[in-house]
Amino acid sequence: MLIAGAELLVRCAVRMAANMKVRPLLIGLTVVALGSSAPQMTVSLQAALNDTSDIAVGSVIGSNIFNILVTLGLSALIIPLRVSRQLVRLDIPLMILASALVFALALNKQLDRMDGAVLLCGLLVYLALLLRQSRHSGHHHNSHEHPPTPWRHNILLMLAALILLGAAGHLLLGAAVTVATELGLSERIIGLTIIAVSTSLPELATSLIAAFRGQREIAVGNVIGSNVFSLLGVLGLTALIAPAPLSVSPNALAFDLPVMLGVAALCLPVFYTGYRVTRGEGLLFLGLYLAYGLHVVSFTTGMPLAGKLEHLMLYFILPALLVFLLFSTLRAWRRQH
Image (tube, rainbow, N blue to C red; front, side, top):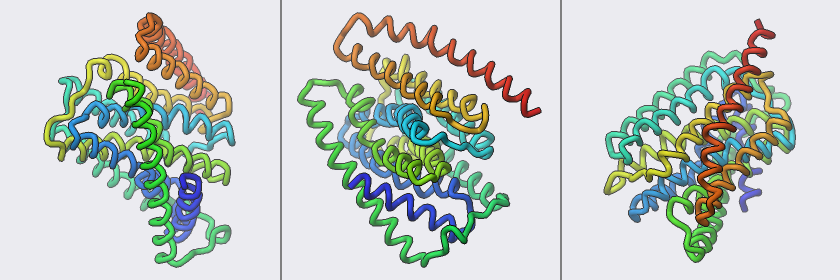
């Protein structure tokens, strides 16, 4: 169901871009991203209403980390991803700002209704910027390659794709939570790992299918758009309608949120150097997620390795990686100018 829904969603996105005479990137950043983020919205709202806010917040943090490191990493292994200048100049900086905004609002260890309203206002600003960008874009999709199709046909197929993705995500999520609960995992760990991965599977399937079909702009735009929607839309709406403020655990503040912000910031230099994500960079992303997953597992099992891994990642690996990427970015800037 997941694969069929993703395949259908990508086909509809390409046809919709042809009908609207806009780049597939815009459809990937909006319609595809919003559709593939639907399971995340459902899970976070249910978790907040069931008074399990650690799951609501942790699943968004974990999903954003997974989307960039695993979804983009695996997609780049299939085919090197082409990155448009719009992403580097607008969407990735906005994703970094959204990550920083959530981090700043969570410093008091909770997200209340006022914070939710601020996040939703940020989403409206993002959508307005995308609309403005689409109006000023001079690029038109090749309608000879994808001839226009009736709008009613596209809408019905897209609804069918979203139903398939939502149902598949619900089945996977239910099984994952049952297994995790029987293993005695904490709400934070369940949110960061099992639920985050399960709710990210629609994005993963959609981007992989897009990469297989050569729609590289949709593969990248889906991830960036989904992350922005999750941070501003999912967390914003969840905090706004939750019966009580969403609590943010000290461990999330000390480690998970900085990692999420660092991973978002990592995209800017990687994407800027050559405006593409190579297979080597895809392997780097996957390696970073492996290190992050190893830390979560060692922390959950109480291994002494957890503290050393956290210290190593925060104070050695990530700073060294940022210095290397900064050097690469400066070198790429000199070549372009």
